[in-house]
Amino acid sequence: MKKQSGFTLIEVIVSLFLLSILSIMSYQAVELMTQLNFKSQQTFNNESKISRALQIISRDFIHMKPRRFFDGLSDMEPAYITDPSDFGIRFTRGGGPSVKSNPSGLRRVNYILRDDKFVRISWGATESPRQSDGVELILMDNVSKVEIAHLDANGNSHPDWPPPNAPSNTGKLLPRMIELKISFQDETEVSRLYPGVFSN
Picture 1: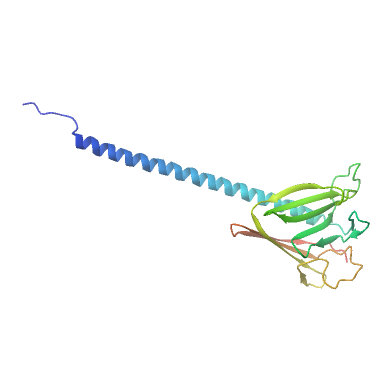
Picture 2 (picture 1 turned 90 degrees about the vertical axis):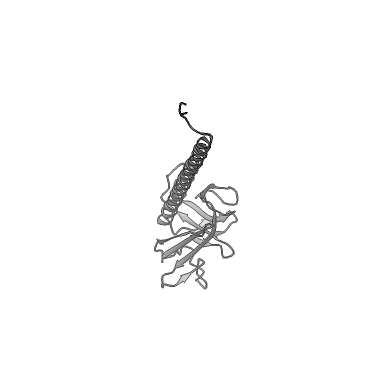
């Protein structure tokens, strides 16, 4: 009798079983690599966005000017002021382009935390926050808290500005140094120190 050649049914079943396991493992490896690549790209995008935001903040602080600002209600705001009830800082910034509507290049900048977003709003020197919404830019998302500290001329730190018990004629007073700390919902945080402009 001739000896039969070929695979038995059991060998075929075992081969198919091993092939299915290899296919599943390959799919899981590809899926894992895709997820890692997506997370890496997302992290890179977030870090790039934070880096751009910090550059904008740095340029704003570097170009601070000891100039008070008309608030649109027949009153003048100090050159730099915080909101004690919630995070918010407003100050006058120079270094902008000289255009017909704003030949001085001065702008009023307002940083706020709204709906977990760190927002920058600015107005030209000839505009009024009471009459214009300004130019709004969302700098960062998923922000849980923003803390700020100001160093005065005597080396004392204050969370709000102008400092408590400051003389009434300190409308042009600027902090000697500013520390900004931004906390995110993923429990990471960034902090920066910015030199102020000597105005006293």
